[in-house]
Image (cartoon, rainbow, N blue to C red; front, top):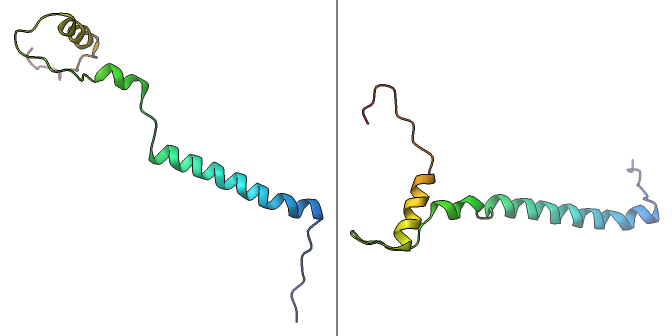
Length: 82
Protein backbone atom coordinates (compact mmCIF):
# COMPACT_ATOMS: atom_id res chain seq x y z
CA UNK A 1 0.00 0.00 0.00
CA UNK A 2 1.46 3.34 -1.00
CA UNK A 3 0.58 6.78 0.26
CA UNK A 4 -1.06 9.17 -2.16
CA UNK A 5 1.23 11.95 -3.32
CA UNK A 6 0.12 15.54 -3.06
CA UNK A 7 0.87 17.77 -5.99
CA UNK A 8 0.74 21.52 -5.40
CA UNK A 9 -0.03 23.94 -8.17
CA UNK A 10 3.04 25.77 -9.54
CA UNK A 11 2.16 29.19 -8.10
CA UNK A 12 1.32 27.79 -4.67
CA UNK A 13 4.55 25.84 -4.40
CA UNK A 14 6.47 29.07 -5.15
CA UNK A 15 4.60 31.04 -2.48
CA UNK A 16 5.00 28.57 0.39
CA UNK A 17 8.70 29.38 1.00
CA UNK A 18 7.92 33.11 0.86
CA UNK A 19 5.12 32.69 3.38
CA UNK A 20 7.38 30.70 5.68
CA UNK A 21 10.08 33.37 5.39
CA UNK A 22 7.62 36.14 6.28
CA UNK A 23 6.23 34.19 9.23
CA UNK A 24 9.76 33.47 10.47
CA UNK A 25 10.67 37.15 10.21
CA UNK A 26 7.55 38.19 12.11
CA UNK A 27 8.24 35.63 14.83
CA UNK A 28 11.84 36.88 15.16
CA UNK A 29 10.64 40.48 15.48
CA UNK A 30 8.14 39.49 18.15
CA UNK A 31 10.72 37.54 20.13
CA UNK A 32 13.30 40.34 19.94
CA UNK A 33 10.74 42.88 21.16
CA UNK A 34 9.69 40.72 24.10
CA UNK A 35 13.21 39.67 25.08
CA UNK A 36 14.78 43.14 24.66
CA UNK A 37 12.02 45.76 24.94
CA UNK A 38 12.78 49.36 23.99
CA UNK A 39 13.48 51.79 26.81
CA UNK A 40 10.34 53.41 28.17
CA UNK A 41 9.88 57.05 27.26
CA UNK A 42 8.97 57.99 30.82
CA UNK A 43 12.19 56.49 32.16
CA UNK A 44 14.02 59.77 31.58
CA UNK A 45 11.65 61.45 34.04
CA UNK A 46 12.69 59.12 36.86
CA UNK A 47 16.45 58.94 36.39
CA UNK A 48 19.08 61.38 37.50
CA UNK A 49 22.66 60.94 36.32
CA UNK A 50 24.37 63.83 38.11
CA UNK A 51 26.01 63.88 41.53
CA UNK A 52 24.80 66.35 44.12
CA UNK A 53 26.31 67.13 47.51
CA UNK A 54 24.85 68.66 50.64
CA UNK A 55 24.77 72.44 50.47
CA UNK A 56 24.82 72.65 46.67
CA UNK A 57 22.66 75.16 44.81
CA UNK A 58 22.04 76.09 41.23
CA UNK A 59 20.29 74.72 38.17
CA UNK A 60 20.87 71.04 39.00
CA UNK A 61 19.32 71.40 42.45
CA UNK A 62 16.34 73.27 41.00
CA UNK A 63 15.79 70.61 38.30
CA UNK A 64 15.91 67.84 40.88
CA UNK A 65 13.43 69.69 43.10
CA UNK A 66 11.06 70.03 40.14
CA UNK A 67 11.38 66.33 39.34
CA UNK A 68 10.75 65.31 42.94
CA UNK A 69 7.71 67.59 43.15
CA UNK A 70 6.23 65.88 40.07
CA UNK A 71 6.66 62.34 41.41
CA UNK A 72 3.41 60.63 42.34
CA UNK A 73 2.76 60.70 46.05
CA UNK A 74 2.93 57.41 47.90
CA UNK A 75 -0.34 56.44 49.56
CA UNK A 76 -0.08 56.19 53.29
CA UNK A 77 -2.00 53.43 55.04
CA UNK A 78 -4.96 54.63 57.12
CA UNK A 79 -3.84 55.76 60.56
CA UNK A 80 -0.20 56.29 59.58
CA UNK A 81 1.53 59.39 60.90
CA UNK A 82 3.02 61.98 58.58
